[in-house]
Length: 349
Image 1 (cartoon, rainbow, N blue to C red):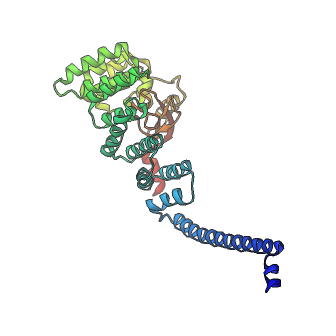
Image 2: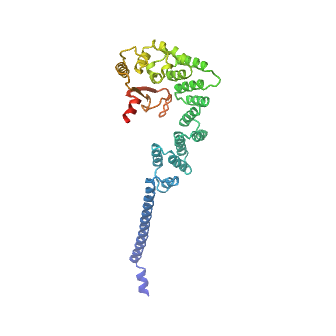
Image 3: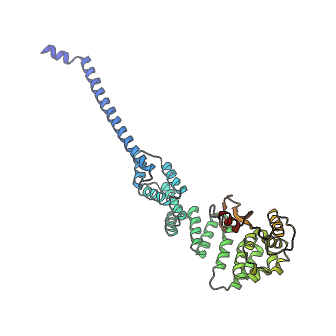
């Protein structure tokens, strides 16, 4: 018994037992980690497959964010990719799910901004307004929120509130000169107490000092006060509003006033309403004038598009405020020769 006791107390035996226990614990820990990793990979592959099929739910994104420590910016990038695809609902679902789990004030404000912007792009103006109002409650100097509130009020035709927001942005040292001018013209145009004649008078006076509102004034006059438009034709740069003149019917044109404006003469000769010129300094109009002189049914026409001088984006429809960068009075009219509608139809027959 004494021999056995001495053997058990041998220091070398204790060291062996110690390392054996450490090895067993390490082996079990390693095996468990391998098991967990395989399980996680299997779950991730299943989740990834669902993602490829476009079936992820908002909880799945939060699961990725919390369980796999997916970076916050990666989640936002993922939501942004859905916006570019036009899938606003999926982006909104991601932002709403994130808001339930984010605690940091800065991140929460960022997600709220993205949520409000996505609602705005998707046409959910009321929801977008609610989100930006929520932001402004705890961050009243947030320029992005104020800017979108301005845009929302404009779309809702509440130009008086839009003016108030513009004043707030101006106090935050943002240049709002063009925006305030645009809002002012819209307040005049949408004032139910003013007659068309009075509106025309005010707009023309405003145009004298602010040439950037030329198209807005010309468009209003051509719809509601054509007689005044033709009387003031010399005040407008005809080539800059060529599309408005181009689409006028023959009966709506005052050719006595047109005869006093060389640019207008070129336009209506190219249109085929007149035959008083042989050439134009403008290449496109010159071709049309020559075609009208030598062919009776040319079926040639002008095609118009509008380029924002601020963001350089091109749009098929004119808007005073660029739908992409939201700058005001930056749209430039471009026109090119195109095949006429009738000829295009005949070629398909």
